[in-house]
Image (cartoon, helix red, strand yellow):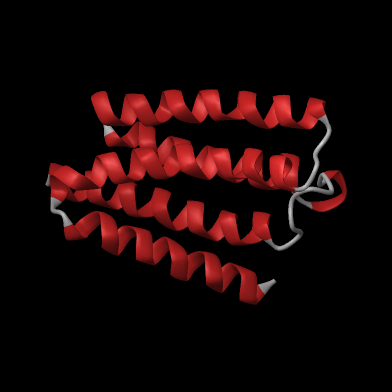
Length: 133
């Protein structure tokens, strides 16, 4: 589990570095798009691994609230993006990990995604708070 957490942290750090590389104006769109992609990855796992239609519908519907939070984060406040990334942890662990995990999601993925999501959410909050000072 520590390996998976470390991988997620490292990948989250890479996303942050990439988002920062284009300057402050680029960060929001990168994090917004990333949030939607993070939600769509579960749909991709379902399509690739033969998930039942019910699971595909549920995972597809899950993209909607994360898309809304991404949109709000792009238009209103990046704190909506931070909320979206933090809420995605509930999706990772509540729906796709442990005893309730569907068979189409690799067992390691929700743990990787959790540390990724928390790092990105924390960075966005720190960035917003720092810009207000």
